[in-house]
Length: 468
Image 1 (cartoon, rainbow, N blue to C red):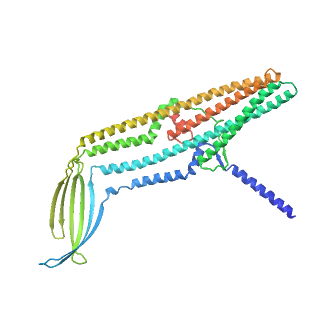
Image 2 (spheres, rainbow, N blue to C red):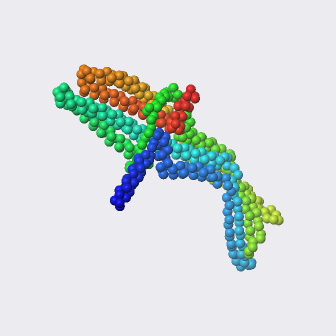
Image 3 (cartoon, rainbow, N blue to C red):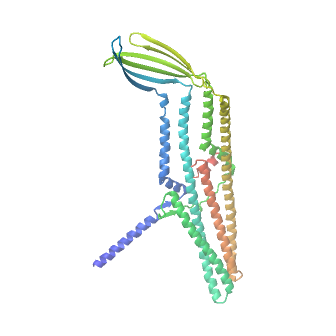
């Protein structure tokens, strides 16, 4: 009885283990490249932290308006003085001051706006880096998908060739076929079997690299259930290249940054040459003094400063202030200071600034040209893959028809089995070429979507058709 219970328990354990194995075998299923990208991003701590950092930078830039706020200062002094002919004095003073810049010609506002826009572009750079990461995941996804399909085609070829090998072996044994024909067939079979085995090894390698790209360990069980090959819908982008260029150009962060850099440099140069606009600041303070606490003698002061700091050779500072208490105005002061700053390279520096602006514009134009060439190359490569796929598909149709006649010729003895095998190999190669062209076209379409910042759902096709 005890043995029966143990046996039943063992069966239950084995059954549950098989269920667990079945669940683990289907743990991670990918049905599209977008699905793979989403999974990879969700499992990447690096990109999660990158996004958090970019968002925090945007928040920091939003609240970086401290240059517009007043500054406060608190000071305390205590002085004891002795005189030979007068009474000793002890003075204690507490002073609170407020400093506020009132006008600077818009320089700080410009820097604040540029800082906020730069933080937004930094977030766009994070998105650009994420798109590069997505592109790598998609590339490995399609490599694995392609290798899986090629391995399947080679496996079918080996199985079909093995059936013919068994037949020709029997025919050779019965003397119906020359031994040399059998050996020739066997050599070809060994070659295609070796190609199948190599394809399986390559598939295992690509599976490991794909798992690493999406953040899975090598032991994880994965499955790709992507039927795009059977639902393939070719779409040629060449007629929409001008529309795509506008989309890609407007989505490119690097071009936007270069526009911002050039605009900021131009405005800075413009502001630096407005030497006649002063930086105006105000200072107000209140002080309490006396020889003992509590201090009950408040005095007030107010001062305006005008600084012409953009005068490179002789910056000027002018100030005017007053002091008063509760009873009277007791102090009025005005002052001016000029500092001589010889700068023999002043004219050269102005010329360098102008040259820098022109270089920024040339760099932006070069970036646009490079981006255009990249886009055009992608579009042409994509459409060429579709044309090659169409040629391969029509060729497969011809090969399949020819193979039907070859079967009849084989039965009648009018065709050698090695010739039939060669036709099988040609058909398999045609199917592999068709698969390769279609997968390459799909991968290039994903690259176009990445370049245009479109989601991986075919939206780029719809956008092209809507702007036809």
